[in-house]
Image (cartoon, rainbow, N blue to C red; front, side, top):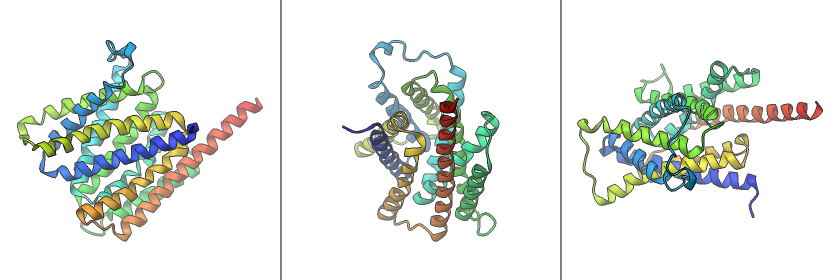
Length: 294
């Protein structure tokens, strides 16, 4: 029988695997319009969530008293998703994954202004180290700047705000409802791109495109389950396995070899996020100790 922490690690590992496979398929789908790929991500994500809705909520699963916050979560999530889809098609897989690790850095910044959290010197140090890592990867002003480098950063900004809104929504809303509304918003957005022309996929391509939604749906659910069973700061460092998967898939499928600057920048970004997570552990222990003493 697995402990709660072991279950948390297992769900996080499964989530990373599913997200990595989704990224590979999105990168492969370059011959299909992004809007069409978004449709498969949204539609099959919705189909998946109908299997996890509790029976007692099946006829009123859509009810919520926080529609405005759901809208903000979906809007920021859509920006992040479109940005990462574009980045995956235009940049090496390992580069996109490396920059995406900077999301906790932006979450820290947003938490100051949106949640009125106090940020000490260690977390500011983490932010600075992380930005240096991003600068090393993208090399602005040193070499010819590839405009597509901005999309993984937009993804980080959107994902960071998503983290803030989910933190607020999860106090009253079930995880499956938060994810359902996001998948629904993805599908609705995709319909706006139909006039741009969609391509009829072959049967094999139809299966692969469907897996974008299935992998995305289960990955989100497993990620939430991981955070449910174990502390966020304990399991989050496992996310860095995604870089190993990205290097592996990028090399064997597309012949991409990560540059030294990408690896150095990725290391700095990883160090910065580890500083943030270790600081969160320290703060939580301090607060707990103070409550016990009181």
